[in-house]
Length: 454
Image 1: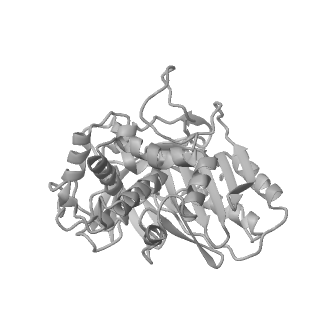
Image 2: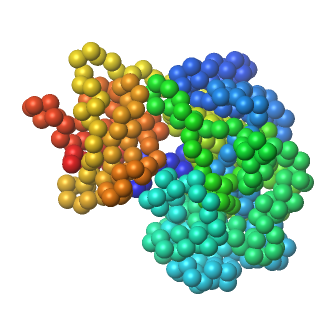
Image 3: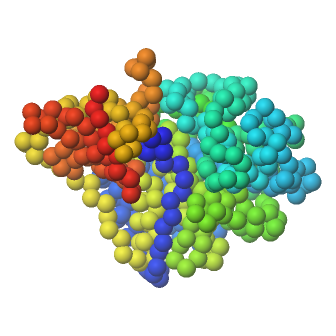
């Protein structure tokens, strides 16, 4: 159940047409549509040959800065520094994790390569049941290592490609161990300063007014936006604590693929991706028309981010958001479709309304999910959101009902049907003859699960 309703990886999209000369107006129209329907707040940048060909500012909550938290795009920075250390002879892809952190299970089998391409099997600490509730706390290195060590591994090393933020947090610590400098100092001296990235930094300290020098993120409940509580940078580290702008990320990708940061051999290694998952060594593969793009997505709090470079076209697409209620991939697909004049169907944001439908209050409560009606895979909670909307959140601790979990917004699509754009999940609430809710039929992809109301 933990994999339902969680989105971290880059979804793939395919475009199959030629560029449209009026793409700028088309993209503007699309993003205005998204913003009008509370589906997008953020910035978009397209570059060709390192030069900007489209820039769109659609931040609903401007505060005088173009800086956004970029989440897991931080991993590109981390991977670049690791490959630089390899080129300097200070590290090898074959170096074992046990050289640095032997207490982690299977550390004597896990290599730097396994950490880079997510084949280590190490427990992903963002699956910690108290993550959302305690994300604002300040964590020490000892706290983080203990959290990673105590988690059950997803698998043994080299058995499968399984995305884990723990891999890159450990790589950040290894960078510090080798260089005897903070991760932030390494990124600044090796990437930020050489490229002149003026709006990129490792988030660590607040300014004099007590705020971070970036945008805040916001969550939509179906009616209104509310400011999201921030994750403390000490919790995401080298896996997700960077801040940047669309211009800086586009410059980073152009520099990386044009030999300004790592050697051709290192870049070739970074591009080696798993055929099923698309996960590589700090990059994801993204099919686009008849070419391959490479990049990464990120999510932290209500920030979403994506940057993709297509070598064959020398083309970069970068999106940074501080508020959405649909998948980032839908936004990226729409922009790319307009640029390449491909058919694209806009998402329908209409909410089902009927004076005779039950009030959303009757659906709230705790539910138990079982595969085939036998194997328990977890409990979740349904709570009220805005008008004709609900929230879905995992329910891990029955002893403490005050603990919060990450929530997915559900939009009403029928009398007793709801849908999550973010997770592509459909929920049909089941009622008995007296109109009392007894359960849910939950469908996500090819999986259907019956859930009982407790």
